[in-house]
Image (tube, rainbow, N blue to C red):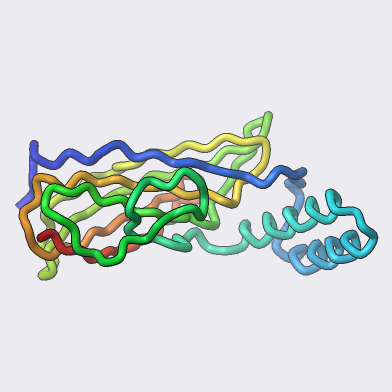
Amino acid sequence: MILKGKWMPAATWITCLSLLALWTSAVHAGDVAKLAEDAEALIAKGDGPAAYDKMRQSLAAASNSIPFDIRKAFFVSEKPLMFGSYERVASNEFPAGSSLITYAEPIGLAWMSDGSGVRSAFTVDFELRNPAGELLAEQKAFGNFKIQSREPLFEIFTPLTLDVSAVPAGDYVLKYTFNDTNSKKSSSVEQRFRLK
C-alpha cells in the first residue's frame, strides 16, 4: 500500500565543506602516488602550503578514480552542522511519530568545469518497505542537490530527514538511492528500523 497524502518527507539539505587549497584540473589517477611523494618532499623542506596543495591534488586524483559510492550512512540523533560531527543513535528503535535523520557521505562525485570553477549534483530517492519487501512509500528526487565551487569538494555530507509520523508501529526497511547527475551512476544504502 502506497501512503498518499499522509507521507510528508521533511526538507532535506546538504552542507559541503572544503579544505582550502589550489586545484589542478589536469590531475589523473596515475598521479596519485607521485603527488603524494611530492607532498612528502615538500613537507621535508618545510613548505607546508605547497605540501598541502600536493596532498589535495593527490586526493582529487584518487577521488576521480573511485566509483561513486556512499562512504557512511546511518541514523543520527540530530542534524549535524559539520562534516564528521554527528552522534549516532544508540539503537534503530524510534517512538512512533518520529522523524528519522540519516547522516550520509557520498564519495566519488563527478565534477564538471563551469568556467569559473566546478559543479556537481546528485539526487536522492527513497523507498520504504516492510520486512517482506512490500513497497509502502517512495519518492524520486526526494533530495536534489547542486554544488558549485572554485574547486572540487571532498568532505560532502547530507543529513536526510524523513518524517514517519504517519507510519504505524512496526519494522521497516528504508532505502536511499543516490544518483550522481554528471556520471549517471547510482549507489544505494538500506537502513532497518523499528517504530514502537
